[in-house]
Length: 348
Image 1 (tube, rainbow, N blue to C red):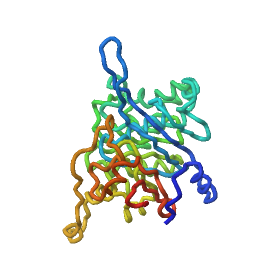
Image 2: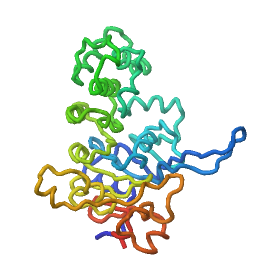
Image 3: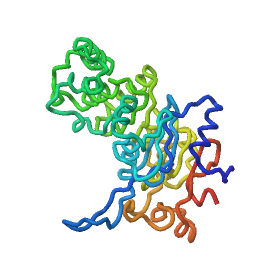
Image 4: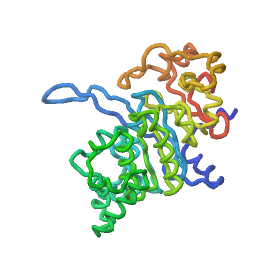
């Protein structure tokens, strides 16, 4: 056990470089606090919602990093803050060697060609007044990558065909499509500028179960074809195991465990990860009948008033009296190569 090695994105990037891996996105000490104000006219800040609280990770070129956790733990806010859709309160986001947090709006606008987002709700993320052709071609018009109308029409039809839609749908409107088809339109829009990095924010959670596997398989095919790198945000742990190379587990704005997907699933170290995985159904009825479920007590605390000590101490079944309730949140520490956990019980 290498319990003294704290997680450092720069140090892990150097190790990965020796293994031939290239860091595409490096996040260090990322924080996003939303102010809580009081008063009608003279509003003053009386607190803050700590949606993302000191998060660090690397995403390597060509991989899929899964970000999992309960609703409200800060997964989507992390994804949006990485893309600078939300300005971070503190921290660093380096994409393709360039620091995003200090860029001007004009500089960020140029960078947005290289990074895109697939949104969670295919019903809300498409403008109902725009045709499918206009939705998919909008990034091309904004960034002026294709100016010839006939070429743009041909390219949009090609994109629709590539995501499994009939190219003749270009003149139809979003209300004429099912949820799965709308999400495919959103994927086509994200691909239009040929990005290198895509944040997929729970892209299948609003879809029927029968459609989810189709969309995930499509994302895998597109990753190989377009050399894409994904940050895949989800709470469906079985789907994360299928598509992701590495996984990071979030709880109340912090990453509590991170490592190669199979390593984390076969040997979960943090009590929260263990509880999450115990809830994933197993197809074998004999194994399912003998499994022990870990039922967490209570509810997730408010990110506006996180508990003193470890964030998980109010629900942890193995919390240590004293240290877990008094010491600040433990840092991510390497237990086995590439497998990090933030837990006093494991690291002390």
